[in-house]
Image 1 (spheres, rainbow over the protein chains, first blue to last red):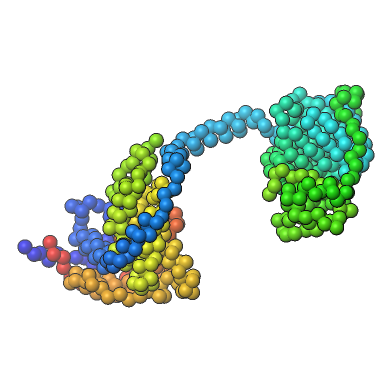
Image 2: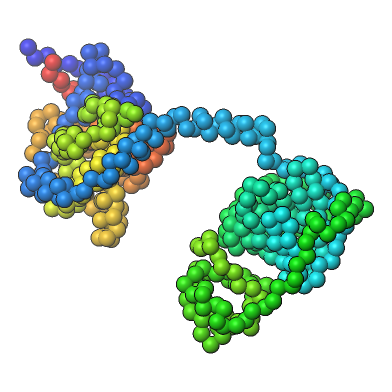
Length: 335
Length: 196
């Protein structure tokens, strides 16, 4: 039997707009058995629209596809299984990470925020270290590239080196047997975690250049309170605004805890070796070059020719005469 | 460890407890072709014509197969396919210097029309045609996927790579515009009959 259902114009309009706005995973808000004629009309309209949009593709398309599909290779199953397994842990992993972060935030085992330099233990007073001197100390090699002043202090858990001025090149061994050391300078500080870095204290700012390895840094506010601690990997450069907190550091507090020279062993000055032959072994390796003007170049040493090093850097080929260089280091953590 | 490999929500494929074998993947892929190629071909043909639609569709299905082989979790095959196709379409448009999605629609002969469709066309399409002129290209695309292709909001969000919330907001805007047009034009649906 055929019946004609009269539909209300406004209801039809609403059914249409409701269909458009329905947010569920399904397309319609009510089950098919319980719908108004207007909604029924809209459902039919959508069905017809979809059917009208469908176009049967030519059979050749599928034939071509099958041929191309057969040429596609399957990736390694072991990897696939591994990543699928990982995916099944996708809800567990964030929970574990959350607990770990909570514990880290709660107990703050590595946090130095809020600490002041004064919390470090007694130390020797500042001493002037002349240019090209090298100091060796528990896994640290501190080279004075320019004359500067520094002081050492020993805290309960860490050793501290305070730098007042100068230009320093520090090489730190990564070893669990060495004491944790912090270098403090106006405006911030750095903890080496294995690697090489430069610290240059200017009048208004301190520049930290990490050429190799990893460090942890912090910056301070005007009162010398640590603001934040972050971990950085080479290559990395940061300028710290001098807040002058080292000036408020009471030198009389830096009592000579160890007056002997055991803590800091002064070794011979390093020699400049500008002989061309010395650099041939570095050709093809990644190097880090400290120039006379204080700049640092890092890149792959392509050629040594006519007393000039030709280095492939990130920004292109750079040639620098040996006479302009202060130091050349083999950079094992190539970019 | 178990993994959901293919589209469970659409009822296309089953839960797989192990990494699916070559045969399972190919069977699933062929099933996807059977179920979605018609609509996808129509979607592409409407924009770029039948010839190019064939190429783009092949590309889309090959990418789907690649993803399946890599063991990628695909929750909604239809939305995933359209998303790939849309990307292909956009690249093609960039190559061909098309300007926007609404300007180059190809008029295709409608082989599926019947009396009811004619009625709907007569009553709705005339109105929607003028309404569409007030929509932005993105709104136009959303409206088209919803009304002409029957996509859910979740599917639209996946295809156009927007959040569901944003799609909902866009649809609200679209509805407001259409409502204004409807009311101002005095939508004359008349006594549309429905056979029961």
